[in-house]
Length: 326
Image: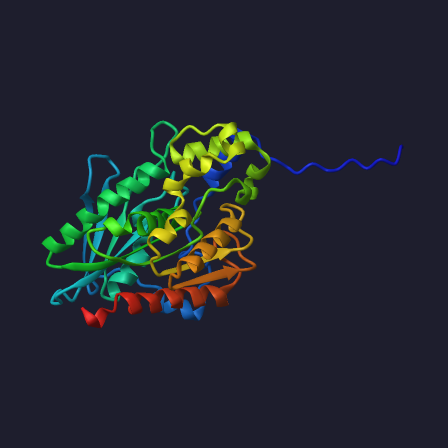
C-alpha cells in the first residue's frame, strides 16, 4: 500500500438510465398519500354523489385523442358568477388521467367552484409530445372549459390553476406564462412537488449537474428542442428551457401562490423549489411556501406541515375566489 487515498467520484446515472428513471418514477400524486388518513383530512375526503352537482365527462377541446376534459358543476346553479379551478393530473408527463383526481375535483365542486380535470397528450417515446406541447394544450383547453361551463349556465369570472407533480408544473406554466392572456383573470396557483425550473446545477438528484450529456438529453426531451453539451456548458440552454420553466415567468405575472415541496424528494429537484420561492419573493407575489423537511415526493412524513399547506390552499381559495361574493 502506498498510503494514497483515491477520491471517491460522485455517482452519475448514465444518460439512458437517468431519463428512464425520471420518466417512469416521477408519477406520484400527493393528495392520495395517506394509507391511514389523519382525522383532520376527513373534511377533504369527498366522494362524488349527485347531491354535489353534475359531472360531464370527456368534453373535447382539440383534435387529439387525449384532448378531453371533465367538468364538475356545483349544485347551486343560481349565482351570477362562478370561480373555476382547473386541476391537472400527475404522472411524470408520461402517465396519468383526469379521473385520478376525482376526489380533489369533487371537493372543489362541493365548496361551490366549477372544477375541471384536463387530459393532455402524454409523452410516449413514439410521439412528439413534450412539456411544451402539453402546456400549449392546456392553454387551448381553458377557453373551451369556460365556454362549456357557460353553456351549462355557469358564468366564469375568475379562475385558479392547480395540480400535483407534473400537473403542478403545467398549472404553474399556465398561471405565470399564459395567465395574462387567459379568458378570465387567473387569481391563484396552487399545488405541490412540480418541477419549477430547469437549471443544471439544481438537478443533482439525477447526477445531471455532473454530466453535461445526460443533462442535454433529458432537458431536450422535456422541452422538445435540441440541446447540445455545448449549450449546457455555455448556458445558452437557459433560453431554450424558459418556455417550460414556471419560475422564469413569475416576475411577468406574479399570481398569488400556495406550494409545498419535500426536502428529501428524489424524483424532482428540491433546489429548484428554492429558486421558485426566491422568484415569488422578488416579484412581490402573495404566496405561501411550505417546506416538508422529512418528506419525499409524496409529502409523506410531515403531516402537521402538510395540514398547514392544505389549510392554506383553502384560505387562498376563499381569499381570491370567495364563494359568497359571486
